[in-house]
Length: 128
Image 1: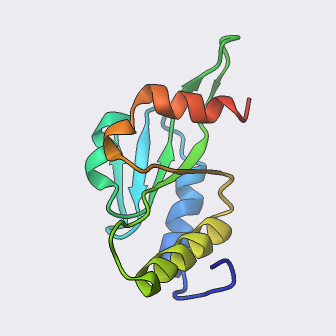
Image 2: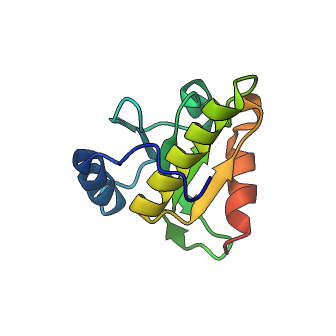
């Protein structure tokens, strides 16, 4: 599915992602790709309802040594019960967006109820 290109990432979304990456705010925020909406002050628990599509999430991560970073996390949930062609299109679209936005913290979630602060901190712990 990496070579399957089913869509191009719109230039306005690329620009929005670039600005989002370098934003000055220090709160958690998300871009929900299908809607192209920036949601400020959103917690991991509130993201559960948005997992019908791709989410780019800027998370305020407090390290054990006191440092604070703002990793961009790509969170997605693979569609369940759809045709293989649809799953391939989904995977191709996901890969294209991850590649275009140069995202490195890519997390799949199977059950939206699992999307919690603890889950995200555990996933990010592998990078630090």
